[in-house]
Image (tube, rainbow, N blue to C red; front, side, top):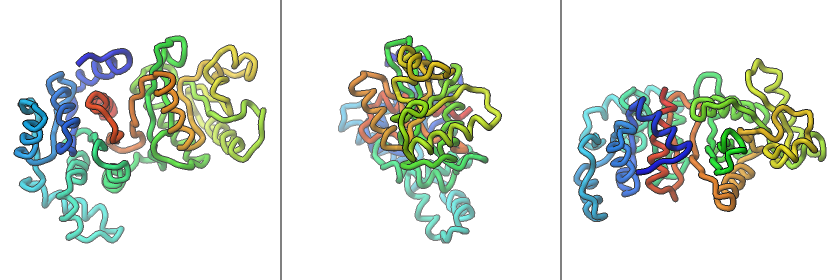
Length: 335
């Protein structure tokens, strides 16, 4: 499989780390094909959760010869870890009213089982969501793995790449939050921003320049949504930070130098932004899809950030290539 641009850089870096990634959706041929690619290309050590006979039947039905011999298959129904997983889950959730019997039932579920493997260090990260909804993928993760200390808001972002290398960071942008938080308040926007800066540095390895997007640039319009954005920007500026941030900025003022020179001439970010913080999920989701579909930008994600250990949620419309990319990114997040 050929990789280009940012994704090639991520895959090459993942190969050096060689982390172990667990995939709970072995009943989907896209996941099985992606597992094969990731294993054969030495991107990661792969664990598939499921019944081996069922996986082989799926492969035969799809005219696949089978799976790479390096892939480990773990069946929850025959695993000797069920008791340990159930007891650990019960200890984690009994204060929320979970009984041991409920925990024993839940760990038979592939996603819960895989999440427990990550929690207990048997895998470095998980990729799911080809079959499961975001809520079904992340509910066990938020219950078991939880957010990093000091992070109240787990969020999701997309890495977006354009062929116009003069924009963003050599053509690369980070869009957030495009996947999880419908109406983030000022504190949540701060969490999303701080996590996005770290993710950008870890994955893109460029200097972050953060723009808070709005329908207004530097007071050109008025409204509560604009006031919220300005308050969030000021909160971050009052922290001890080592990156450039500005807002509120309209999209064109954030990324086009000629527009920036007219609308925000004194800004250190306008016209140069590579991290775009959207005011809410509706704007973020629409924004990345417009860039992807009309702007022909590569969209890698959604990528989850702010968790104690990396778990990434796929789109149910994903291709096997998207899953391979998510596996590689999860390897880098596991550092």
